[in-house]
Length: 81
Image (cartoon, one colour):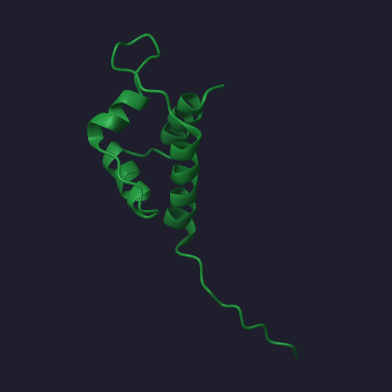
């Protein structure tokens, strides 16, 4: 299974639109255009197909965590009772 397949399956399972994926990528300061995103969802024999690299998928997953759970709190102070 390729990174493109994983991205497609997550998109369908989570019912994400292209504009939502672009917003998720912005959460981790990774800019992607609508046309770049469309190239990732094409069939691999299409002339404008683009391979989804590890960095893109990693940033998407990190952005998805922020999107679903919210930003990470920097609470380094632990309370001992």
